Every structure is written in C-alpha cells, then in structure tokens.
Length: 272
Image 1 (cartoon, rainbow, N blue to C red):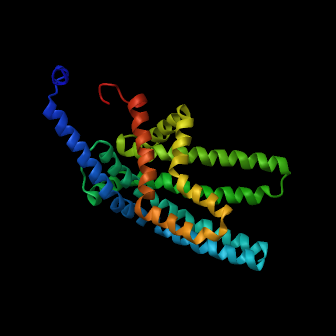
Image 2 (cartoon, helix red, strand yellow):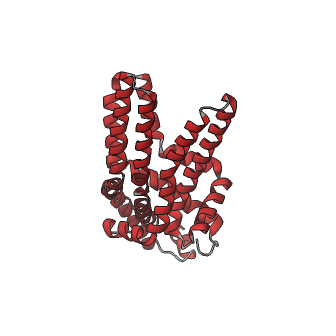
Image 3 (cartoon, rainbow, N blue to C red):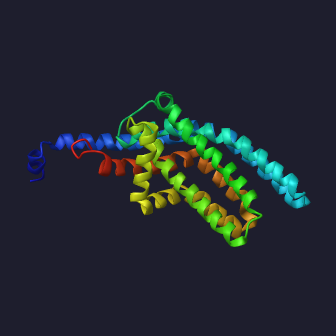
C-alpha cells in the first residue's frame, strides 16, 4: 500500500530512499562544514572584536582609577569612530555567509570559499551600505546621549527609549536584508522596504529569532553577573562558541526565517 501511494504521486520507493539518503548526506556535510564556514565568516569580525576588547579593557582601567569624565568621553568617541569602519567591513561577509546558507537550505552541496566570495562579490555594494549604517548607529546614539544629558530627565528618557526602539527595529530589518539580497535581485530601496514590511508583519517571530541568535551570549552575560568567579570559564565558552559555530548559527536562523517569510509572502506558490 505504501508503494502504491508513492506511485500515485509520481514517486517510487527507491526515489524516496535516494532522496532521504541525499538529505542525510547533506546534513552530515553541513555539520562538518559549519566550523570552516564560521571561521571564514568570523575573520571579518576580528578588527571589531580586537578593537572592542582593547577599549573595554581601557575603560575598565579608567573605572578602577577614577579617570576624569572628559578623558572617558574622548576615549569612547575615538572607540566609536574607529568601530564604524570595523562594523562596515562585516557587511559583505554577511552576504557571503548568507549565500552559503542559502545553498544549505536548498540541500545543495557547495564549495565554501568560492560560494562565500561569490555572494560577497555580487552583493558588496548593498551589504557595505547596510553595515555602514549599522556601524554609524552607535556613534549617533552616543552623540545623542551626550547631547540629551542636559535635558529634563523624563524627556531624555523618552528620547532614549525611542532611539533604542529604532536601533532594535533596524537590527531586525537587517537580519532579513542580508539573506534577501542573495535570494532576490532587488534594488537597495526595495530590499529595505521588503525587509521592513516583513519585519513588521511578523514582528514577534522576528524578535524571537533575534533573541535565539543571541541566546548564548545573553545567557553567559546573565550567568557572569550572578557568578563573577566563573567569568574566565564563561568567557572561554563564549570564545569557543563563536570560533566554532556562533556566527553561522545566527545567520542560519536569519536565513531560515527569510526563506520561510519569502515563500509565504513574496513568491507565488508555483515558484516556491
């Protein structure tokens, strides 16, 4: 009976078995390729990570020594100015890893390096612009924070909340924009518009995906706050996580959400 049902739908038992073996082989390849793809992706984050670590250590020294506010402000200003191009550098890498993950989601084998740089090469302009905007936001928010320090407390707090909401919304939009730019041929305006509309239409889902992507560092930060003595071990766990899989896991979640929403809202059923 099972064989008859399969043949009614135009498939035979051997065809289904071959397809199942192909899916299992693809999953095995994904698990073995994940660390390599992740390292390739995280290489573009090294400048931002090193620069942030150095300045975090410097600010910790200032806090222990009680440095003057002016010195702290100058250090933060320099940190954010240099961080801007460091974050901008990661945009093309987001496009490259999104191209690899697109192939994985379609159960296709791919050569990691050539597929990565193909996605980077084909989408570097749009991805660089998006990441440049993302890199500028911390500097803009810090400038607003310094300017609003002289305002009335409640007014300043309301503006702070508004700015944080805008930052969160932009991050949710970009988590769809990078997978979408390797999925469709869209002008930058259409790319941002579609990503924005999909984010608003499925805001709870987008927010949940964002939280899941950051659940490991959030959990480690919370654990470190409650158990300061274990901070070195937790930092080691965080480093190993992002060295082996962290970047790819986050981008996989974003790409999976983009694929699901695109099939539902942006593509005809016959093409999905």
